[in-house]
Length: 110
Image (cartoon, rainbow, N blue to C red; front, top):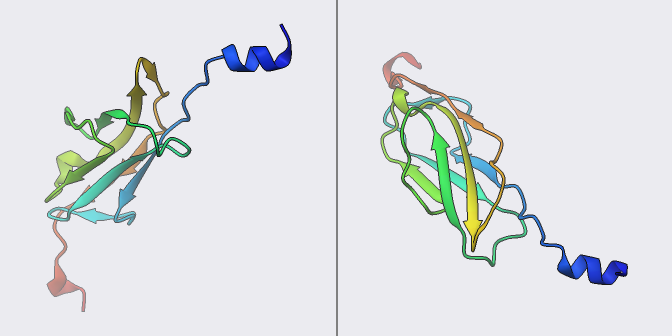
């Protein structure tokens, strides 16, 4: 079997996803809205189904975006994702940490 034949019969491994947080602050306060995204570079044109691990909760979201409206301290922790198409899974992304602290006290800023 020549090199060309081997490359067409070998199934490609899906790219490893990346988790990003928006906003991307290092500090998030209770009550803020946080968007967690699972990005697959090079896989944008493919219909993926996603699986999430994160915080201290069981996440049932299957899309690439997980939004936490009014985040609280129990949402803190590491978030990671993986995706599937047909029967092929990506590996789990590296974990991205979300740090949540109590509410921002704007009266003590100035």
